[in-house]
Length: 260
Image 1 (cartoon, rainbow, N blue to C red):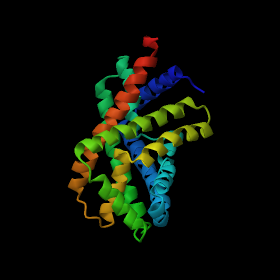
Image 2: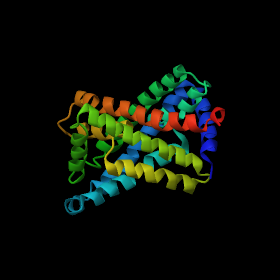
Image 3: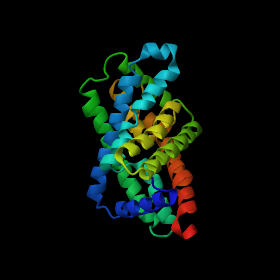
Image 4: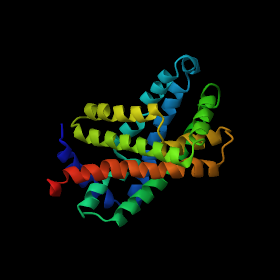
C-alpha cells in the first residue's frame, strides 16, 4: 500500500499530466467520465429504485442498495481512466500549494471537464436511458421523479453543505484508490466512501447532471432553470469546497515534500 506521502507524489504527477492534455483529449475523457457516472446512477435506479416494497418497510435498506450500486461510475473513471470534475477539484491543489502549477491551469481543466461531464451525463440520460425506455414504467419512473424532486427541494445552503459532504468522500475515495497497488484493492477502496456518500444522501454535481435531466426527459414537473439554480450551482460550489479544501489542500499541506 502507498503511504499518504507517496499518494501525494502520485497526485502531483497525475495533475501535471492532466494540465498538459490537449483540449480535445480533456473533453473526450470528460465526456466518458460523465457517461460512466451516469451508468452508475442508472444501475442504482434499477436496483434501489426498483424495490418499492422494501422501501416501504425498510427505507434504509433501499438507500444502501442505491448507494452500493452507484460506485460503478467512479470505479470506471479511476481504473479505466477519465476526467471527472469532482475528482479534479482535489488533484491540482497540492501542486498549486507547491507553486508547481498555477490557477490558470486549474480553472481551464475544471471548466473543460465540467462541460464534458455535462454532455456525457445528458447523453446517457437521453439517448441511453430515455430513448430505450429503461426507466419509463413503474416503479422506476416513480423513483426517477422522486430523486429529482428531492434534489431540487432544498435551500441553497442545504444543497451546498451536502455538496461538501459528497466530494469530501469522493476525493477520499480517489485518494484511497491511489493508495492501493492492485485493481481489486482500488475497487474496494473506492467503493466504501462512494457508497457512504450516496447512502447518506449527499449531492454530487456530476451525478445530478444525469439524475435530474433524466427526470425532466421522463416528464417530471421540473424545469431546467430549477435544476440549475436549485441544485447544480450550490452542489457544484459545495463539491469544489469539499474536494479542494478538505482533501487537496489539507493533504497537500500535510504531505507535500516541501512540508516534511
